[in-house]
Image (cartoon, rainbow, N blue to C red; front, side, top):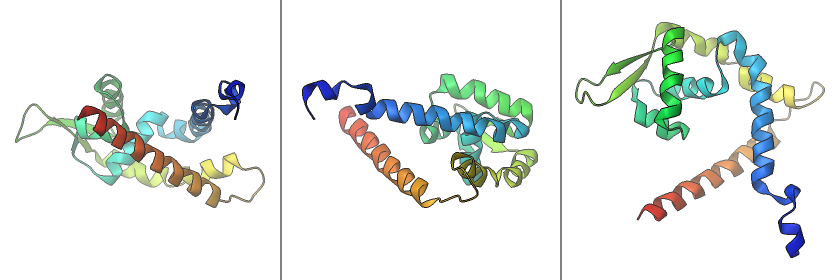
Length: 155
């Protein structure tokens, strides 16, 4: 690639990721609205369905969100009745997040979302997940590289 090509918008990885992320989140919106979830609250619930009773810091680390973003999100999830927040009995400085029964029951309603999202991206009736799985795996490798780079920058 010559020098002039490097600065073309279509050659920027960040731009392609930005547009795809924005468009996927837009596709999630109609799937999540009946559950009273935003995309960010959805990924928080996904994480809590995997591991309940985590601290706010643990959830923030998992989701790559800071407390300024996470706190209002958790308050909304608590108002909705999906979670409860309680002080850790061993260390009161930590706030733990627990799924309520309503939050646990929501998981059943959310099970169709990944398949419905995939089908909304592809036209027609054929929903080939292999392309998305390959992309997801590539992005996970990139995420691990960012994390390793961040850890090495701190040392």
